[in-house]
Image 1 (cartoon, helix red, strand yellow):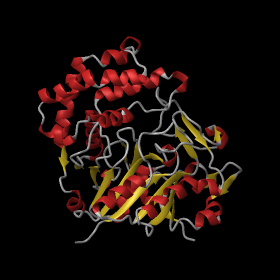
Image 2 (spheres, one colour; image 1 turned 135 degrees about the vertical axis):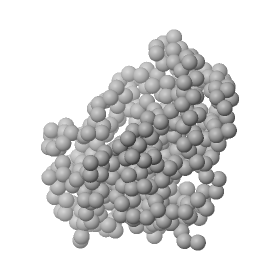
Image 3 (cartoon, helix red, strand yellow; image 1 turned 90 degrees about the horizontal axis):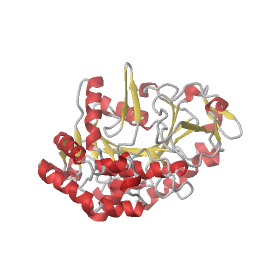
Image 4 (tube, one colour; image 1 turned 90 degrees about the vertical axis):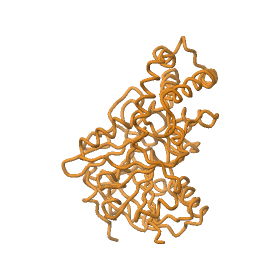
Length: 407
C-alpha cells in the first residue's frame, strides 16, 4: 500500500509568521488528494490565506481548504464547536463550498465554561497578564486532565438532556475546585461569574454544539484513513518560542507543544515518517500578547511598510508588537533545538526547509538587531545555508508567487 507524504509546517517565532500561507503553498504545490492535520492548540489560531480575489483567516479549518484539502483533528487538538459554526458559515460564503472535517473519536473540545474561566483569570491578572487569547484552551486541557473531559465520540451519541447533565455536573463538581485553585470568587468575577451560573447560556451552547457535531465525521482506524491521501500536512499553531515547555518565556507561553514533538509522536504511533518540515518566519518578528520580546522596536523604527491586516488590537492581547531578528546563530537556535525530535523519533532523513514571508514589507531585507541584510546575503551565511535543504521566499500574500531560492 502506497504511503502518503507527510509534511509539518512550524512557526519559528511567537506565531503569526505565515503558517497559513505555507500550508496553502504545500497544498497548491502537491496538487493531489490532501489532508491537513490540526493537532495542537485550538481555535485561538488565526492563519491567513489569500488567493486571487479571496481572503480568509482559518482557526479550526485547515489552511489548505481553498485547495480542497480536508481537515483532520487529532486527539491532541481542542476544537471549539460553538465557534466552528461561525467559521464554517463564513468560509462557505467566501469559497462557495463546505470543507470536510474528520476527527479522532477521543478528541475532546473546549466548553463555554473553559472560556469564562480563562477570561476571568486573565482579567484578574491585570498588568501581569500572560497574554492569553481568552479562548479557553489551557482551561480545557486542565479540565480534561482532571477527569471532566467530553470526547467527540460521547457527544455523537448524546441528546441535549444528556449533554446538559454533563455540563451541569462539571459546574457543580469541577468548576468550584478550579476557581479555588485560581483564586477566583463568583462575587468578584463580575460578568464572568454571572455567566458561569447562567443556565440559559449553557442551554444555548449545548444546542449549537450538538448541531455542529453532525458536521464532523469520526475516524475509527486512523492509519487506514491516512492511506486515502497522497499528501498529509501537520498545521501547527503558534510558534516555537511559545512552546509550553519553553522556560525562557514562561509563563507567557501557550498550552501545547508547538514544534515537531506532536507530528513526530503522531507519525511514530501509526508507523509513518516525516518527509519534510517547513519552518516559517517573517523577515522580522512579531508578538501578539504579553511577555518578553528580544530586540523589540516600533513598526516605524523597523521601517515596516504595511500594518498587519489580521492581528488587530484587542482587549486580550493588546497591539501587535514588532522586533528584529538576532544574528544568524540566534535565528536558527530554536529550530536546532526542535529538530532534535527528528533524531529522537528516528526521522533524521526528513528535509529541513525554510520559508521567509513578508519580504514585500521590508524591501526584501531580513531585519536583524545589528542591521538589515539583503535576503541573499543573510541566507548565504554558513549557519543558515548549511541547515536548510531548501529556502523559499515570499514577497506577496499569495502562495502561487512563492519562489525557491537558488544557491
